[in-house]
Each structure stands twice: as C-alpha cells, then as structure tokens.
Length: 130
Image (cartoon, rainbow, N blue to C red):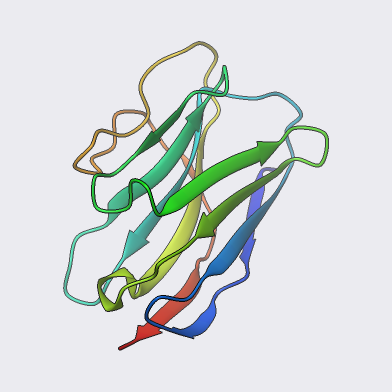
C-alpha cells in the first residue's frame, strides 16, 4: 500500500526558510515522477517542484531559484528546501507520485501537471507572514 506522509510545515516570516520532507512507503522503485504541489485557499492546485526517474528536476517559475527538490532513494524520502519565502508561498503543500514505469515530463514552468499523479499525501501547511 503506497503512503506519502509530509512533515516540516509551519509558520515563518518572509525571507525565512523551511524544509519539507515526504516519507514514502509501499514501493521500492523510482517511478516516473515525484513532486511537491501546493494549494492556497481559493486557488487552484499548482506544481511547485518535481524530480523524474533519472533525477532530473523541474520547477515552477514562481519558485525557481528559491526552492530545491531532492530525493534520497535509500531512505525513500523527498525533500523540498524553501528559501527566501514570500507571503505568496502560503499554502498547503502536498507530496505526490506517479509510479508508472518510464520517463516523461512531470510539471511545466507554470506548475501544470504533465504526469499522472495517482498518489497523494495529506499535506502540510506552510504560512509565511510579512
């Protein structure tokens, strides 16, 4: 049974940093994509950062240069280092996975999904105050 459990959210002032972590279980292979998404109240869900089966990364333009996604295959964890946080980054952050076999793009620069993310965590809240 695939499970994704996020942790590391919290409240921080603008300009600060947070590190999110996603503990994955129920699968031992890389899968096509793993990614972080976010959704703010009243807004659509958007992709933030993703990592593909070969370790290639992609980011939404809104976070490029500030956020870094990384994956530890031995521990089966997916992290998101968030620096220079802005109030606009306030949202619920979700870990997601497309466990199909093969390579393909994960998210586009506008944060749209380009893969079939069938597995989702319950989310962790990030609040940035200005």
